[in-house]
Structure formats: structure tokens, C-alpha cells
Image 1 (tube, one colour):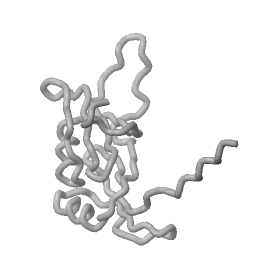
Image 2 (cartoon, helix red, strand yellow):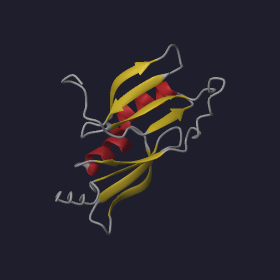
Image 3 (cartoon, one colour):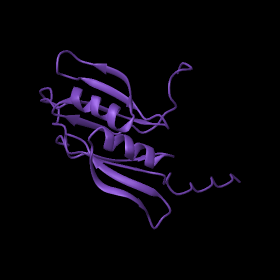
Image 4 (spheres, one colour):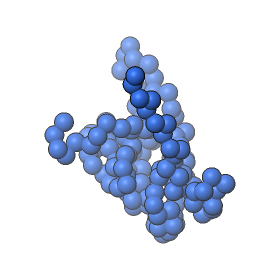
Amino acid sequence: MDTNSPAPQVWPTLRATDARALIRFLVEAFGFEEVVTYGEGELVAHAELAWPEGGGVMLGSVREAPEGDEAWPGRPGTFSAYVVTADPDGVHDRAVAAGARITTGLTETDYGSRDFAAADPEGNRWYFGTYPGAPRPSAAPEG
């Protein structure tokens, strides 16, 4: 890996009916950063959007699978993700200003997170909040 490559991580993936419009929306409404987009015309073969606080998503246009391959399992609009942010209020305000449909307003959860949820134009659900996940168990000492 060169010094600009991210550390290994999980990259959720989705397909979109209008991938280029979805990329614009995710950048404008939520603050994702477009890293790379491959494809010609309206077809997006592969795109990577980084989340400024770490991680990101990959996406592409919905299309037929090459002969012999299994079809993509998720239909456009069936994706959901939880995105950790230190500033859910700021992301919420940005999403509202960009016209995002808020599906759950800002709320304090029972587990100590401040969250909200929104739908993108394809119908995917995006949850943003401060909950970073439970602490990881310590590695047992080798003996």
C-alpha cells in the first residue's frame, strides 16, 4: 500500500438507477466526498465516496450481470447504512438544506447516541449518529 491508501476497512456497496444523481445527492446532502468514478455517459461502473470521518461506500449503476455470474442481490433503493459522525446536527441541517427527506428527526437514543435518518432519492435509508459501536473485547494474552 502506498502512503495515500486507506487502511483496510469495510466498504458497503449499492446499486442505483441513476448513480450519477445519487453521487451528487450524497455529496451535497450528507457531505460524502467523491474519490473516483469510472464509467461513461450515465453508466457508473464503479464509484467510491469517502466519509470525511472514516470509511465510505462504493456504488454503481444497476445493470445486468455478465453471463455466468449471479445477479446483484440488492435492488436500487433497498440499501441502508449507519454512518458515525461527531456532528449529527450539522449533517442533519445540511441534509435538510439540500432537500433530503428526513425519516426520523434528531433524537437521543437509549444507548447514548444522537441520531437522525434520511432517505436518498433512490429510497435508500441513511442513519447518522454519534454511536461508534460497542468497545471491542481485549485480545487475550498468549500464554
